[in-house]
Length: 272
Image (cartoon, rainbow, N blue to C red; front, side, top):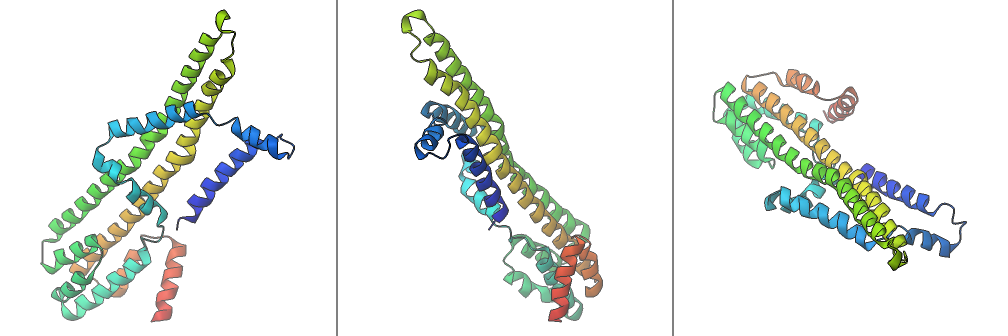
């Protein structure tokens, strides 16, 4: 569970709501009234409706259908564990040195990660090292490109939401100016002005408190996945070249930070 994302989002909205209520002197009626001042159906309709419509117009249905999957990826912070991958690669290296590369086929068939399984099978089939590496790196590049498209969708929403906030502001100002006609008596000035201001607020909230953090979180998951895949590539190619398992571990540990190395290495040594 992505606790930091949840805490940050909840705190951001809580601070905003508290700021809206400041000055109400603790009276429940005034608190509700103040919060009610920031609700405007027309503003919600303009900002959310137009933002969603632009996303539908900008991205294919297949990309929009992945939105639930994006949230699952964003909330899962434990999916990519570099130390677990390094341990598995060292185990593969030990088997390969003892029984040969063909002995890895059974372990490859049991592997749940499709990329890891593909990499193992590439060396089991005794493919050329350069060609095998090229296939692996191309897979990483294409995967990163797809992930960037997903994050780009939320970045697009983050950029258009404030723009439609300004559109709502213009709509409200136009209605306000129309209401200033002498014959109308100016009775609609308040609601029109509220729409003019609140739409800008809604646009900024959606951009910087909803869509922006989602895009950032998706890019972080992509970086974690890419790191793990690079470790797999380097480990698999070293296994094919007959690297010593102990040397392989030290080599792969250079991909991660010192603190993570110490934690992972300590656990491994304790198990040995």
